[in-house]
Length: 415
Image (cartoon, rainbow, N blue to C red; front, side, top):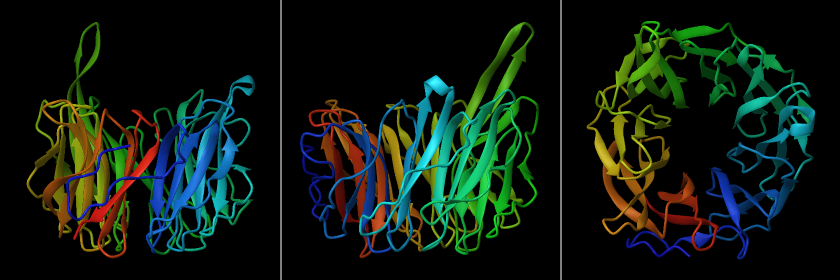
């Protein structure tokens, strides 16, 4: 098992998956009481397990067998602890890849498995978010067609009631739209396709007109939105990667700059201010994430690669930036913030001796604080997730591969 962290206010990592089960953790989501749902793959099944705020674990809830290769497995819960899990399965003999869903209650009662995507859709990626307590699940995906990648959306109400399949935008290079869920249940969908685009899914299921939030500055410059969050006013802070290309006669374009950046979108789906570059010019970035507090403060973190380092910057509610800080020498995990901007940025990295450490960087009032070790592993881990619980506590989970291949959770105080 992972070694205990050396922090007085952090508990020893505890297993989420049963002993002897070789698991691949995929996602976690926490409700308003601190109960956390963990979705993981083990023994050729998609599984769910709920960890109560006091540490007690529910029985393992098998969702569906893993019959074909899969790539996406996500879980979302509302403040009451009711939730939904989604996953994809490739059906090779039918030349399609479909997205499936299953609702569950806070008590662990499961609904039926529902196929969300039409038979003729080959899905490349999918996202899910839940409307406030008792509301519908909003699921987006991008369909592979002769046009390229085309974005779609659909809702799931209750256990089985599906809304219409709606085309969100055109191809050929559209991502599965990211979902920013408003407090009133409206969902803003943001995707990249020759610029950053957005439209709103209203409560009655209608889609607002598509808006170009930010068009490419030149034919050789573009942005890709990689993560986003929404504050209580409905303003969105999005993490992005900005890249430019240089064209030479007879040679394919070469990416010269690949920088972490941040942009903000108003409730009216207009760009707020300008796109802000965060990483130094010439440093190639391979992933950017953001955590957004309801009050408007945010933290953006990015990694150069899996070993070169993780940096983070606080974005204040007024849009000004804090100091850039290096928080780890490894890879990004997750970001979770409360309404006042407190929380954690999780990451992993190595010691000088090559041992791997799971780390949590504390955030206070939107400012980056000290970094502490919360877990110690023999090698790199995957699916590092973070959530906040009542009482100023965090819950960080990850999947190890040596020696147990189990999912673990570490809890501690961020205040």
